[in-house]
Image 1 (cartoon, helix red, strand yellow):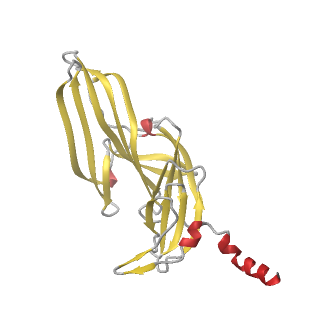
Image 2: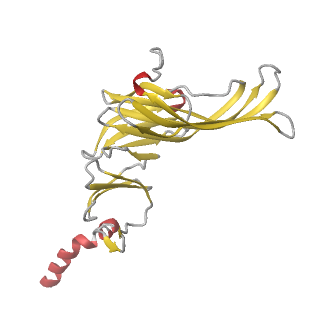
Image 3: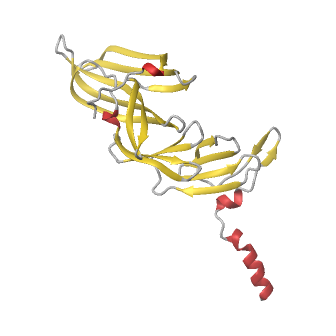
Length: 268
């Protein structure tokens, strides 16, 4: 009986381990690549640490893991509860941005999570509809129903800058200013701006673009290259609908970030 007890005691760490711990024992060598199987939750995000010796992964169930790049061994895991509605690793591998939607697709609580300390850098409630200005059609609007479709965040620790890219999509009833005829518009718009952390709170720093941005590159501290995207589709308000005009463009822009547009001081 004593021997059996000792065997069970030694085996207890394996018996009570999570599936993740049982699987994450290291890389399996294959021809030309290394492979590792985790538990059944779906991986959605992955990033290297700044030093390159760690791999961070995030799954749709709210679980974040730290893995040794060389051995593939699991070093740490953490479960976010409640599960975030948005999770994105920053490009520099130092932090992650977490957001909890408040249900109206416009307001959210945004947090910056430090990957090394496992602590939050800041926490703020943000109204995306009023955070920055965005381009919209010049028609007289009767009823507008823009909804938040996509958001992207990237926090650069060294510069204390949070890049925010927001995309709205929706439709509204409008009136042509000249003819006063009714029309119906489908619109895809948004903005690209920068926030910073002050006193554990996110505040607006400057606005870069009043249109959605699909992706961006920072060449150095002064030059920012990004891809802007905007479209709208206007129909005459008659049956059957007749297409009046359609505008869409996707263009690459280059800005000197020292001269980007800064919001007026009276912005809220």
